[in-house]
Image (cartoon, rainbow, N blue to C red; front, side, top):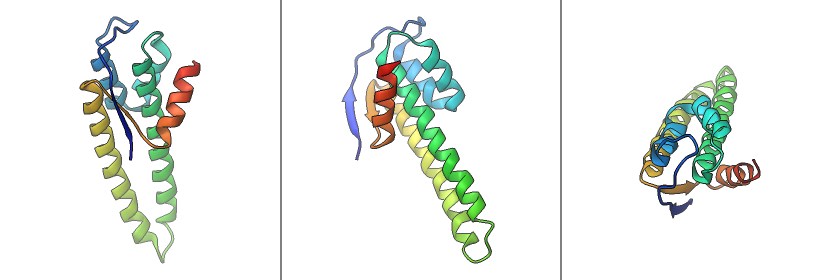
Length: 124
């Protein structure tokens, strides 16, 4: 389902512990991830985690907006409303999983989002 790689503890250009920086990229949402993505210059693991966090947040926000709009329709509105709640629970579980794994020094690459994150964090 996803790729898992053990990463050591390389230094960050910001002077912060790599594991703590990766934890912060997931915990502080897309704003925190954007800050780490723009500020970090050397550590590829932190940049990858920041970009993956930005992308997973973008996917979640898009899904929530779409499901919220669809929940306004009378016939299947209840179903889309339930899907919205389930999507939020799945998102929170994924963020917690990614944050804990990143803090342990494990790089988790999600199927589609991870491929984009790897490409975009390598080219910056």
